[in-house]
Image (cartoon, rainbow, N blue to C red; front, side, top):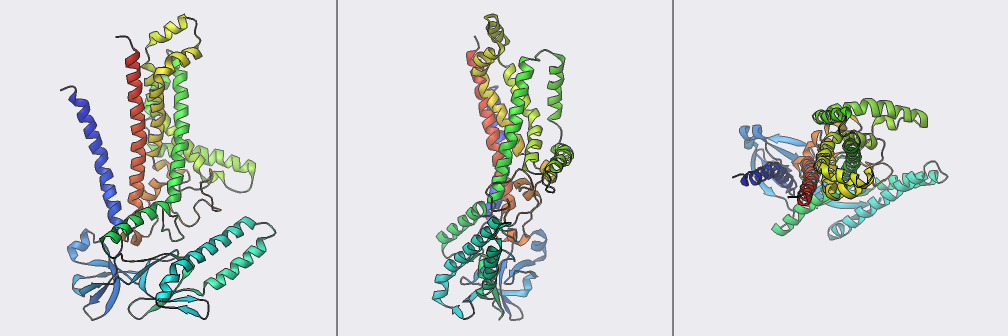
Length: 475
């Protein structure tokens, strides 16, 4: 029976971890399904192009349902108002960077003042022309940024203004099904899509939606992918874990080898256990009150050039989470060093070995897996914290150029995006979540997996360290 207890505990732990992850995964996958527009036939004879949205509990009880209309607005219809519905597989869904998603039939592609394409020629050139316009816009924006303050800035701005004037005359004419036609600038279109035909294409479109959320960048409307958010979160966790884990290992070596039996060692050991119970938001307040407000202000005062370090940033967030992770990592590191038999050290010292030689030749060969596990514990602790980041510079919205100046990695100063903060305070329009933008659920799922991966690595190395010490100990 005793041998079954650890196995049952592990199974229970895996169940507790797997159930929330499975629920998040199911919700993420469900919300990423492709949209299927249709024509709703109203009781008064009108026909409108719409997408029925998911009903909540109140709507199911009342029989009402929200519909996304062709112009991007949302309207609630009672069940008696809609007498019929038919699919509209040829209707387009147009997602732009500066407006909600719209629907309709593309009747013409306008290129300049006199060139208008229709029919089969329109579909052949639509995607290619859209990609070209967006590439030209990005190239000109980068040229303006690169020449700012230099001699070529005026020429770059002149080319940019010329492109903007021309850009207002390149777009598509979108008919909404009720006789209305609107002009949509081609360079602002993030995606043209139609309902996939057949189960295979539907499944591929479903998987493509999930892939775009992970790989794309957010746009000015706050819609798009989470690539920069993933990058910033991983960078933050790695920096925080390295800071917290390294400080904990160094402190554990100092306490175990230099202050092993002293009063201060006992005080520090007890204090580390108490500090592990301090809520994360308290550490966030300390980080904001000292690192951001005091240290950051002094750095800005010395460097000049306005506020930069006094507004929070990745560096202060990493230090805050790193210090927050020290108590747990320190406790595990001390337990790992205490597990090495004291007699081994005494025998080595009696043979004339120095403290460093004892560490390098006696302690480290058997304790390094456990110390590595304690180091990984800091990563898991940092990955699981969100509340402190709201006080030390985490952004509550993502749009456009997240890192600034087209950078691929976040700066140590200034705001930064984080998966947990954006999941707790979603900046995306609610309609996007209804239409297959499950960013909040995907953010929570990614953070959960990140914590589980680092904690599993820590547990694996801690167990390996215990087995190493038991195998070396005399019977």
